[in-house]
Image (cartoon, rainbow, N blue to C red; front, top):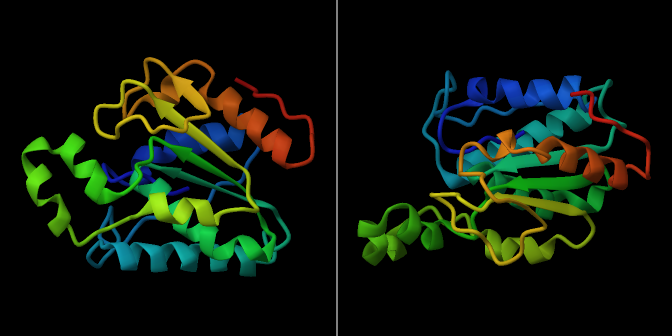
Length: 198
């Protein structure tokens, strides 16, 4: 699970708990460098290195090495997840990608998230260019989820599941959010019956 820019993995424990207890997924949560209690300074290259290290760890553990992996990313974590999946889809162990309120690129996000900075957005050294990376994912099913009232990330042109009252940080609280994840996971795991236990 790749969290958004605000907060750290501690703020995502309730989401992980729902995924584990009510959907039956094992959850690996990555704390980026410079977030929470992690040392270092966060930056695009470093966070992508951290993401690859996390995936390699899961692949090398006896209890998870034969499992199918579903990568989940929120906001900037979605951008991280997109790059990770694009770079690792050939291995065959990634079964799906779930994106929640994810942006197309950092430079395109700046004018909506911070309007006064729109004229200097081109100077941003963090690119997170998901718009260019996403089409490279050709072998992995993707579930896009977006709150239509997201005040930070503008609603993207291609949304598969919309949540009319979901804002940037509370879309997961919208009715049916986890039901969509259950349906997606069931579909990608070959129709295995999964029922939300909420």
